[in-house]
Image (tube, rainbow, N blue to C red; front, top):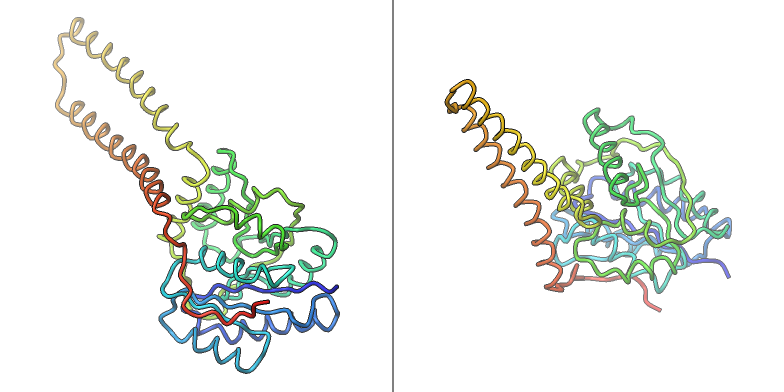
Length: 317
């Protein structure tokens, strides 16, 4: 029996690029259907994450013209990770293979056939991995490399230079849906599933149209979420900093006492103020780290829905 494929595309204010994205994805899907690699009932599912532009009306227009296009509309903006998860949860009962890809065409859609081929050979998770970061600024490249290095040192399984472009089997998606975190970091969760996996390498393109929805602020928030979702290392770091400060304080006390008895010098105002500012700043940092964990625990205990669907045009068996 020919496998059914669903390509899931999270969208947030993507009206400028959506029609071009749909055209390119449809071409790849139709080629796979013509080669009998996937079933003719395969679909492209756009997930509208509370867009404020014409994204949803364009999705409806696409669906009216071509049966392969379907849509999912959130009641408001719930975030990219929730849009990806909603698409997977909606399509998993219908599809055998599920591909997630962003709408901006930075990920190479021509690699989809290679992903499908590897899935046919028994791989259940195929990661789309960038072979270079030439399109990034020097700052973004260096911070990304530092992030992956730090997460690896903390024992967090991440696929370097992989975002959310991947193919997953039905079984892998069912396993992923057993994770019930509200604070989602899918690129950290998926490698923990443990199914047979491989990589497909591609060159990332410039954004086809529109503006990036991941500025520095959001990238930093995503990195912090990933770190605090998979490791308690920041809490442990606070303990080590506290112990270090105790040692430094002890050495400083010995120095001050020695200076007082041997050189008869008085403590300076500058050294006192520097100590106060340093310790005050350290306390604020440690409190913010602890507060991040407490806040995430607070959010998780509410058990609020991760997203709310306003309209669903995806076919149901």
